[in-house]
Image (tube, rainbow, N blue to C red; front, side):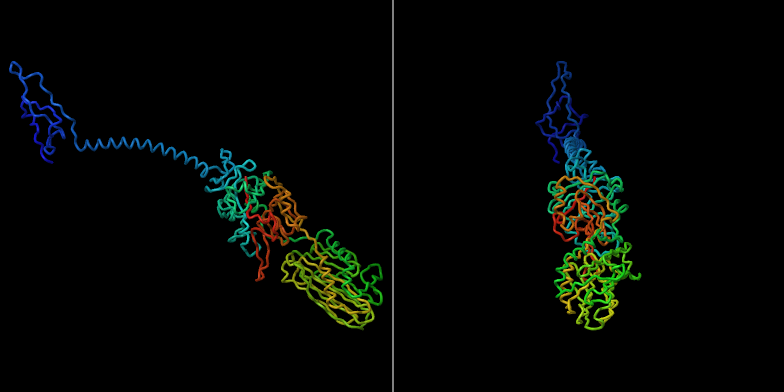
Length: 612
C-alpha cells in the first residue's frame, strides 16, 4: 500500500511541545510500517503553550487511541455478525421445522401408526375412512390398509377382494386346494398380493387377511369403476356378521379355512331327492296317452301273471308272450336281481334306486349315484318267450337323442310280422354332461343280445365306473304284428326325455359354516331376487356360508349373503370352481366367480371383504 504523508513519531522521539491529538479529517497512517492503528487520521502538530513559570501546562492533551483493528479482529467481528444472522435464521428454521414436524406427526398418526388394526385407530379418534398403516401384533412389519371408519361403528379393515375380471384365469385341477396360484391355496395360505388402492379392479389379499385378529366379517358389493375411497357410498350391497364367530376359528379367515374348513375336494355326491324317482314315473304315466300316440295302433297289453308276485307278463293278450317281460338288474359283479313290478329298490351304499310301473307303456327307471365310482358297471336285462314262436321277423335299432345338456342313448330289439302283437323292448341310458362327470369313460354296451323271434334275452350294461345317470326301459307294442320303425321309437324316447329330470340335492353335505348377517345396504329381497331361478328353491338369504361343496365334491369358499343347498353353489358363491371340459379333455377350474347366469349378484364386478 502507499505510505501516508504523515505519521506520528515514536514516543521516544516525541516533542512534548507538539500536540499529537486525533483529527479524523487528516490523512491516515501507513499500514505497512507496523503501526499500532489503522485507518486513523491526525491533526497537524501544534505547539503547547507554557505557563508563566516557563513550565509545562497542566492542560496537556491526552492521546486518544482507537482499539486495535487487526485481520483477526475483523474475522471475529464477521463471525459474530454471521452468528447473529444464523441465530435469527435458526429461530425461523426451528419454527418452520416445528410446524413441519407437527404436520408430519399428524400424517404419521394416519399412515405409520403402530396401532394394530383399523379398530384401534378408530378408538384413537380417527374417524375418516381412508388408507392407514397398521402393525398387527402377529405381523413382523407395517403395511398399508384401507380402513372403513363409518359402517356399523367403523374400525373395519379391508383384507381381500375378488374381482370378476380376474376370475377367468385358468388352472388345471389336480385335487389340491381350490383357488391355487403358483401352487398355493389362496384362501388358506400366507401369500399376499395386490394393493388396497387397486382392490376395486384387481384381486387383492392383504397381510391382514392372515395376521389381523378379528371377530366379524363385512361384505361390500361394488362396481369395479368405483375407487376404494368412494366405495362405501357407492356399494349397492353391504352386510356384516355380529356373532364374533371368527374368534372361535383362530381369529382370521386364513385360519378358518386352513385349520377348520380346508378347501380340498371330497368324495361326495348328490342324492336323489325324496320321491324324485316316483315323481318321474308318475310323470311318465300321466303322459302315457301322448307317448302311445307316437306308435301306430299301440297295443295295450294285459298285465296278467301267475303266482303271487307280479314280475312278468304271462300272455299279455292275443298271444303276445308265452311268459315274458322278466326284468333283472345287476350292480357290478353282484348277482342279478329280478324286478317285481311297482316295487321300489334301493342300494344306499352305491346310491342306486329303481322303480317300475304297470302302465302303458311299461316303464322302469334306475337311478345310479356311484359317487365314489367303486362300481365299474350297471346292467338291465329283459327275458321273454315271444308268442311268435319263431315266426315273423326281428330287427335291432340304436341311436342318440340330445336336448340341451341331456343326452339319451338307446338300443331296441323288435319282433314283428307274425299274427301276434309286435314286441319292442327299448333300453336307454340318460346323463347330463354337466353333472355325470368322466362321461368320456362311460359307455352303453349290448352285453347280451340274442337274435330270433322266440327265446329273447337282451341286456345292456353301462361300463367305465359311471356315476349320476339313469338307466331306463320301456315296452312298446303294435297291433297285428306291425313293425315299429326307428322313427317311432325315437319319438317315444324324446317325449320320455321331457319327463325324466332327476331332482338331485346336495343338502346334507358336511362342512359348511353358516353365520347370520345384518344389512347396511340392500335387503334379503334384493339378494333373493338376484339369485338364478334354478337356484331359488335351494337358496335362502340373510347368511354367509363358508365352504360349500358342489356336485363334484369341489368346494367354494364363500357364499355371499345366502346359504345354499344347491349342487351348483358356484352360481352364487365365490372362491370356487366352474368346471369346464377343455378341448384336450382336461377340466378347467375358474377360481374367482363361477356360473353363467347373469344376475345382479352374479354380475357384481368386485366383492370387498372386511374384518373387525
